[in-house]
Image: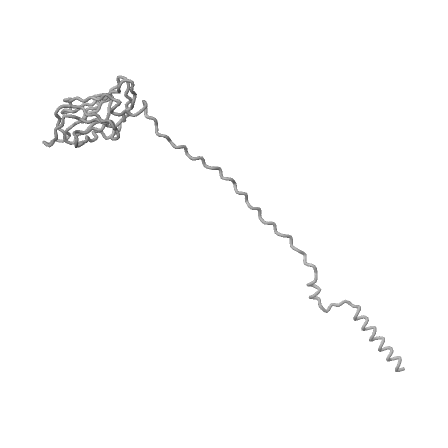
Length: 203
């Protein structure tokens, strides 16, 4: 009887051990979870880089050349026949006339000639504030300018016998013209004019 009970107990123990060995092992659920395959996330596509728009080169502004002088080249004193004479109008003044030499066409500026007296270079001031129109000299065209040798009302003056005429400060060939005895004190000169009446200083 005792041997049968012992055999039965041994059989139950063996059956329990077999069931434990063959059953699923659920003792480490965290390890099983960690061994599960991880699904990889698809790579995020980089934002496309904007292609720079080529810049169209800006064309340089053309250099503006100086406006051509009407009637050709600018006049110099050596291009002209220049004369001077004393006039009694407006209290007395010196009239300067200029005419192009044969075969010459040139342009006088709409300003006054450069007028000086004597070796000390006493220069006449401007009798007109505004600038006039350029004058083209050719053939029989004559231009006039008027000089008031003494614009003051005092007894001070210097006496000269000649007047020096240049077309501009850069004129390399000024001319000296005899005009007789003239008293000079703060002289002024008009612009060049086609009409002699417009070249009377102070009128």
